[in-house]
Amino acid sequence: MAAASGQSGPASDASSPSGQHSAPGRPAPAQSAQPVSYASVSQLNGMLSQLEASSKSTQADLAKLRIERWKTDANSKKQMLANIDSIQRNLQGALPEIIAQLRGQPEDLPTTFKLYRNLDALYDVLGNVVDGTGVFGSKDDFQALSNDLSGFESTRKQLAQRIESLSSAKEAEIVRLRTDLRMAQAAIPAAPPKKIVVDDNETPKKPVVKKKKPAAKPATPSITTAPAGQTPPAQPPAKPQ
Image (cartoon, rainbow, N blue to C red):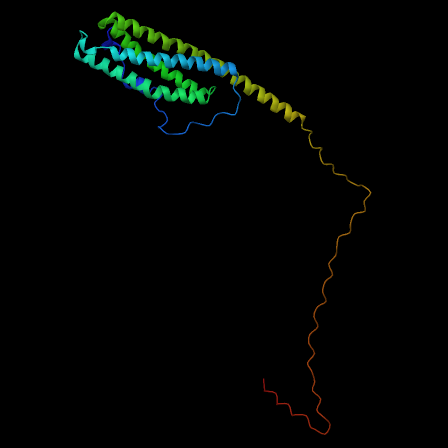
């Protein structure tokens, strides 16, 4: 087996494999209204129970390691301790959080895949620790951690199969819904087209002729008649042109 110094990865890989997870206290997403079969829930609970047992066993076995007694250089010991700390933080924080989310949404594909990615990162970092223990640690520690690694690998394979089954079921559901939609649209009767009837015998209407208003007559100047016995006022003489 290769030494841990040649295979160890960054300590942050296992603690946050997905790159992000919900803040503490944040409410879990609402559960899907789609009913979940009993067989699906039973399968998931079996996997999660196995995963929790592997997590508990791994934490106990990692705590028994005595890295300071390993006959290797200081840098290798430091890197191994960083990997162990990363695994412990993941098993105590990120992993239980994802498990709780998946129990609330048993067939949610994003959450299921999030757990798979977390297990994938855990498997890689724990594998480095197992390799280092096989080279520098005791046989008992190596055997115990190898069993833990096998437990994670078994759950990871089952989870991959579940993701494939859920994806196929979701795809079949989408196809069925599309088919139902097309059938429903085809069953709706189409509105009849509007008919325009043209009567060839209809008498054409005469155009309306607007009457012109008569031109206004010029106003007639009023003539004032003087009372009897009075002389009308003399008109002013016309001015010469």
